[in-house]
Image 1 (cartoon, rainbow, N blue to C red):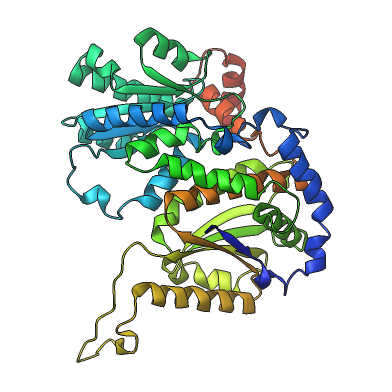
Image 2 (image 1 turned 90 degrees about the vertical axis):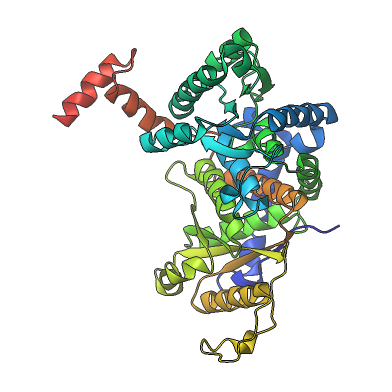
Length: 447
């Protein structure tokens, strides 16, 4: 079976095997908490067995709904923020043609766009202007239906869809992914008769990509969600035991050994531009899970070789508080050879006849060697190809490792108390009903 692989040899000049193995006991306890739901936040562990527990009936329902949207829409807008947006965006971008956004639409293959992930006035104006002559549909994703960013976007787009199609027809093109029983969106969906899918109470947003939250937009984009789930199920089984053959266990131990050695920043590095949004998903997963109680590795990301011409200098010669986790994709989907040129003014004939990816792999290897020589430890994760199965493996691998790693630093990996601070201030500044005292207090601070 082809699978992802984790190689730690290029960290061993910074931390030893003994340093890593010394954490085996703590990692074993952490894995046990994840598998048996005995740690803090154990009411948010529904993702752990999700791949093997996902039913064919649910996948059939998601695919049927996606097919209906694909048949009736040339554009589908997925409304959500954080984990309700980044997971689907990451998978779709990784699997899509790089220039799909610039190609003319094809019947039955709608473009998937996103809204509710920001509060950009120009963004929403321009999105609505784009949609004014489009046959569009909406997937709205929110447990509560009251989260500010997606709620604003849904209010605007729902009104536009009803205006363009009429209320009755608009209902057929709106799908709500929300709580099973509670919340404003659940009430509206029931009242209007929208097609719905459930966000389980025990799955937090950043762990929800393998639920309908991620699966429906991915299926609408035309990708194989069964293969995605199959890959995740393979990794669920591969990460079930506490040993170094478990890649999530090995990764969690290694990054925590580096953290203990003063490496406070982890940079996720890719050499394939299609993985940019995968890194954005990873940043939320680790930042929101580990950044608590003044603890946690800071997650950053670069897209190489592009960022070697911007961030490369700092990584090579800056403060030695960093380590890198490199994702290397072994096989490319297409082939493109570098041609020979008689004049050779650019001096590139020495690589004529080589695949572009061969040059890219040498840039990757050369950079890893240079950074390790410069004091930046490197973990290497190899991915067989950018296909649904391997992305499913990679998603689950990072999720499982995140749960282990968070427990290893004694935080609750499944809550996000710090996220609420900005909301309280924003609501006070906007004079939201119920926040009168907070409004008075924050206005006094601003005088």
